[in-house]
Amino acid sequence: MKRSLLIGACAGALLLSAVAAAESPATHPRPLVGGHGNNVQAFIAEFDDNGDGKVTWAEFEAFRRARFDATDYDHNGTLDEDEYVREFSERMAAEVERERAGLMEQARSRFAQLGPGTDGLVSRSAFDAAGEKTWQAAQKRLASQDRTGTPAARGTERTAAGAQRFDNGPRSRLNLPSSHSAEGFLELYDSNGDGTVDKAEFQRVRDAQFTRTDSNGDGRLSANEYLAEFESRIDRRAATLDQGEDRQAHVRFGVLDADKDGAMTFAEYQVSGKRLFDTADRNKDGVVDAADAALPAPAPRR
Image (tube, rainbow, N blue to C red; front, side, top):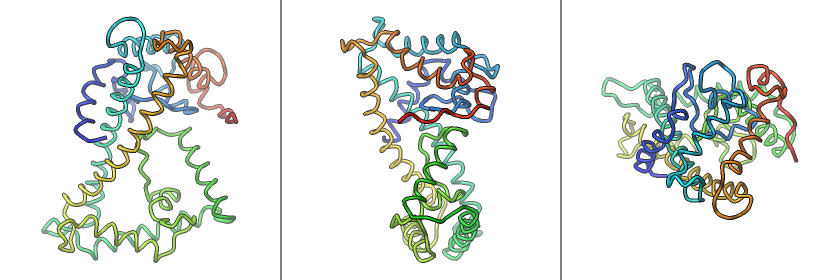
């Protein structure tokens, strides 16, 4: 997904529905794209239109109706496959672009923490010093976890940890790994995929990163070089996400269009909505609120 397409689609997505695009008073803005599974907090963040911390079925159905009508570009009362995929793609582009802005702001902060000199450039020694801090912090995180067992078993543990964060925290669409967690550190630096990272492997990845970032080859990093390298990683991640999500949107249309006539009615559209609401309404009282979030998530279906 190219950035120009993202920006263009962003404007279209934000015009689709004032409900979907509204910001909440919470720290995190209202999600534009769902897919939150068992994440009750994300469900409330997306669909709580009046900001009272809960979502009734009537409120949820009204939200879905407004989104359906906004997706019905030709206003014929049904959705064809192109309309369904287009609306979702625009909403996804807007969500990714919003996340990109936050990630780039974080990257600017990280560059400042590298300790650029009076010339605004980061030397190789300063880059290596920051890498050593990253290495030491990661060793403490890894040591605090049970790292016994086979690489496959450790991979299962990492997947479970990611799933738990997915259920309990704000959703990231790009989901870029970060060395601030043991799982993220392994994803960034475990280049051979054996479930461990030794110092030599870590240093090879850091060397490659410095070389890749130092675009003019002068042995120092400018803010523009640092940000350009990071944004290229965002672009690659977004492009992969775009391809996969579009394919899934086509598949979802085929599933929801129950009579296979190529025209999805609101009743067909709401089949997935009802399933989503029922998943979040864990105590089955017809309201999704903090009481549901406090209950354990149901066991995943095989």
